[in-house]
Each structure stands twice: as C-alpha cells, then as structure tokens.
Length: 97
Image 1 (cartoon, one colour):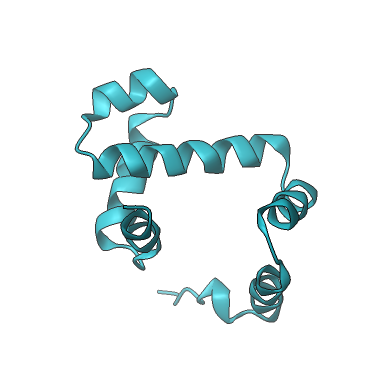
Image 2 (tube, rainbow, N blue to C red):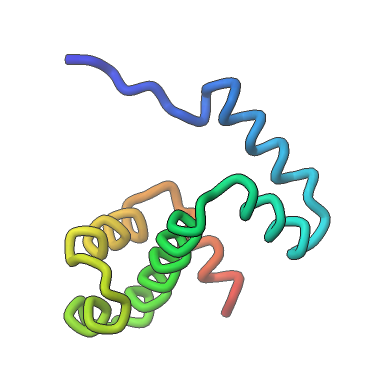
C-alpha cells in the first residue's frame, strides 16, 4: 500500500500559495486565475463553489443536478469535502454570512 503525499507539501504547491498571497485585490486575482487556469477549469471550479453553497443551504441533489448540470458523483464529492474536508468550504461559507 502506498502512502499518498500531501500535495501542499510540494515545493511547487507552496510557491503557488505564496503567489496567491501577493495578490492585492479581486482584479489581480481574476487576472492571475485566468492565466493559470483554462476557461473550462474556471467554469468547473465556479460550479463546484455554487454546488457547495447550494448544499450548505440544504438544497436537494436533484435540484442541484438540474440547476448546475453537475453529476451526482461530483455533487457527492463536494458534499464530502464540505462535511469532512479540510474546512475550506465551510470557512468561506461562514465568512459570507
């Protein structure tokens, strides 16, 4: 059995986190993410965030599937991260209240 390495312990991932901290505002973040990610990745991440917000509001999976077009598997994965992840979704959801 192999042990998975934490991707955040990699030098490249740490450098990426450091780069985020250098950004000063939403426009800089928008420009950086647009250069870093494809349009498809931006759309995917945006939908995952929408799913997390909908799940936190208690919206049923079937409604989320209909509204977002995301698969029930992806929705279940977001639900798992929302309830048993590192707390990132919950942190931002709580701050947006």
